[in-house]
Image (tube, rainbow, N blue to C red; front, side, top):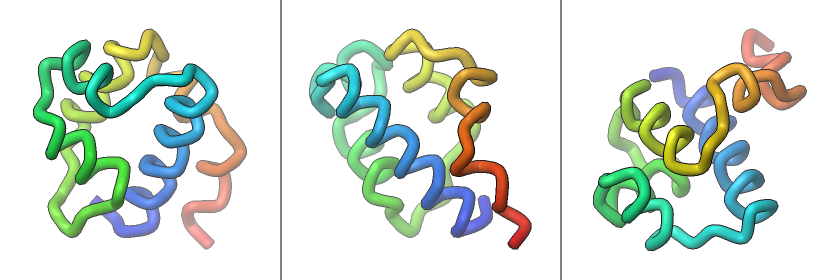
Length: 79
């Protein structure tokens, strides 16, 4: 996955988690993903992030793919 895309995904997820006042531990439990996986995703770790991981997190926080990606921060990824 492109580095810039990973950065924007991490930033968007952080924004949503902050707005919903959700912790990494809560998301880990709801998504059945490890704490380390969630932490790596949010901190833009060097590892590749799979779309299935992002989808699992979004399902856990009750956000659709459309709602997640329909945000201004995704508009200029080609720049």
